[in-house]
Length: 107
Image (cartoon, rainbow, N blue to C red; front, side, top):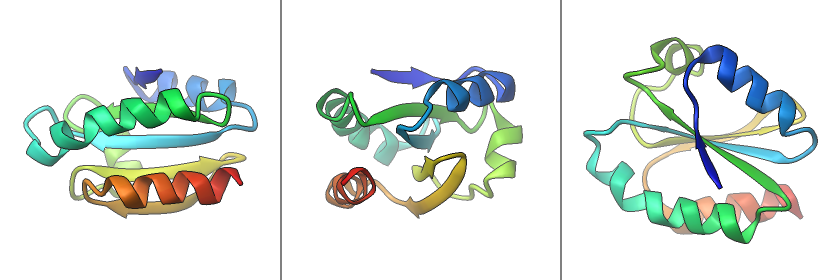
């Protein structure tokens, strides 16, 4: 399941609830073409790796504070959080890189 974050408090609560799972955060915009292209793959990965990852989506226009906190300047940008620390970050709708990163962090 992919969860769309409502605000910073919601984001923080989701991070806490994720416990020891890897959190994949997709910073996106509703007007972003590449974001729309990668969305189905993200849904697929969320289902495939349901026991290992939590997928959060953050709309940069709705959650500007979070986008600023994580220094997001292009969409989509994916950050990977493990044990409350950012362990990986990249921009671009690259499904192969996304899956490889998930595999590496959950191995």
